[in-house]
Image (cartoon, helix red, strand yellow):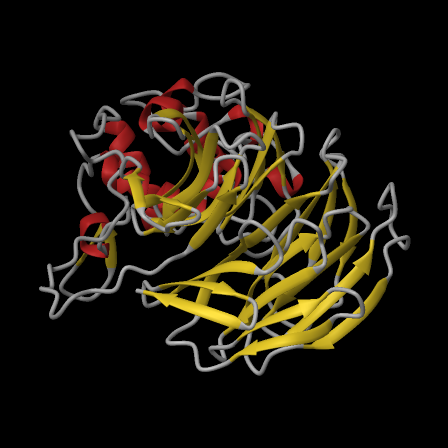
Length: 440
């Protein structure tokens, strides 16, 4: 619904900006998108008022309807925007507090739309949040990056996430079994259920939407979609009991979902940057999140409360994982270091000390993953290297230099000696420790 300025406002010959006469819904929606959705989206519906769609907007909030078609002066929404709703203090104007207020011209756009009847959006207008860009022909063969990998020991299946698709491959022969139904945007995270019967995927289009999906592995059919993020989802984790999935995205939110019916349980807010990684502890009581805001946060899964914020990192964090026994938490990111925390049972503040900070790569760490037995750790970085570590003392046992591109996804397969790398150039590498085997 982002529109060019000329759609919303008209410039006079003198250069003064004035409201367009009788603008349609898209003009008003552009103003709402710019100023209001931080507090009035589906995830942040202050006062129960959602301004994300026409239907939700006209429904109103806890105080009733906020728009009176044809009567802007009687519309509660306009009264709040102009500061004459009767409230005092920080809520006299909307947006509240020190947030930037709407200009008179922007308010005029909304009033004009209401006075002209508060018309509904035209077909296809409601969710058109992409700018209209010219089509540019692609020269050459575009790469199809591997953004996510997951492996099921029970099914001996490897899932490979690319743009808009997921490949299911035999874990031994590497042969392609099937491609799952088309998804919107990049597939950024994958995880199998413990029995390997279902596969969960996180995807989305930046600035447009984020969706998580559950697929039936046996036939590749879609079971359900988890739709709630306003931007691309970058992280996903499944609870040990298989009843809850957690998703995190560029919208800085973490949502806990009921796997059985696809309904949201809780929304966890607290990060000030994109949520790039999530992991449940072995007991399922604790969720860890890594963010572009340079912090790791620990969350109580039952209550949704934040237990602790681990703010030792100097730059953005890309990846994290609990050790298989749940006693330690590893994380890495743009400052090239692997950090390790000892996590207490209740994870209360001051009880989760940093026990190791190891310079690991010459570039930003992209991913890290443990073998099932916890004896091996594999990491990748923007210096085009992959390293395998003995987790006992974090000793480097293998250095795979000279990768063809960034290894943006990695996973151990049957045991601690077999691994798979997925790269930005679209290639896969199936390796045995000390004996890598390349497969394009």
